[in-house]
Picture 1 (cartoon, rainbow, N blue to C red):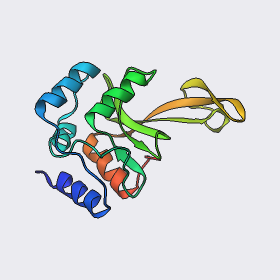
Picture 2: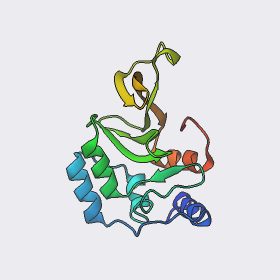
Picture 3: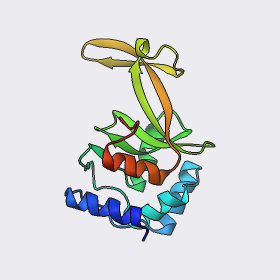
Length: 161
């Protein structure tokens, strides 16, 4: 097992995070077929050791790594079929994932339209108890690879929030 995986698992265990048993190669391959996406090798390396967190469990910075079943479920429910989420912050406030046909790791989030006038994105309407508001849905690249984003999440650094 590579050091970065060992370090991540030790950190999660020290925080009391409930980890799922390892995924099998067959489970990873099934997810790749369902998602029409090939996970990068560093993702597969971690998931062959631990298949995400149990339920909605979170680490100290309020991020959760999703099991493969949840990755497929969230993707099926989402509107953007080119985005493959695998982690979220504060229960879906920001979703971290891959973009099909693009290298790296990305953050999918909503922001106020006025706060990022030069940012491109898709305008979405969100209805809550106070009415309907429009937000800008943005997908920004935040890391070059999965391993890098695991470290960012576990240290609470970088552009993950």
